[in-house]
Image 1 (tube, rainbow, N blue to C red):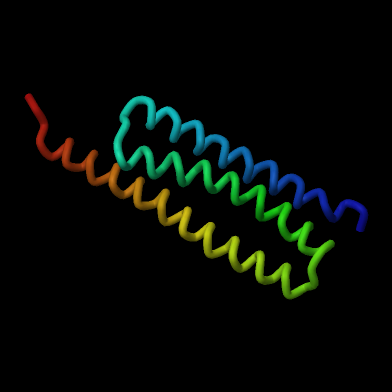
Image 2 (cartoon, rainbow, N blue to C red):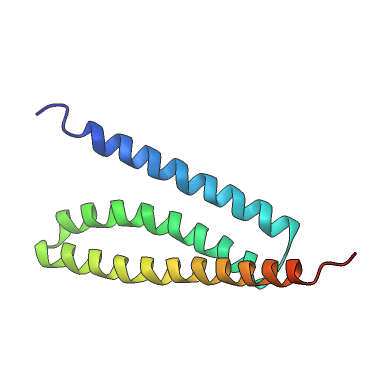
Length: 109
């Protein structure tokens, strides 16, 4: 039972590393091509990291100050906001994909 938290620690590390790589990719894309798509993707990535941190810290704070109802409410709000941030990132990705497809359809020879 003492090694129970190890998978959670590894999971947070791997998830954080993945988010960091996506953030680096979004920064590179933003600096190479400033468009609505790259802005949405960069903002979505930054907000996702911030919400990930809040999603870990806020329930711990709520556990100390509020009851179980406050914990569940805060997790629900974080889930909704996180979904909206994910939609923001996905919208940027779709806009980028549409732009790339249009660019490849009209090759300049």
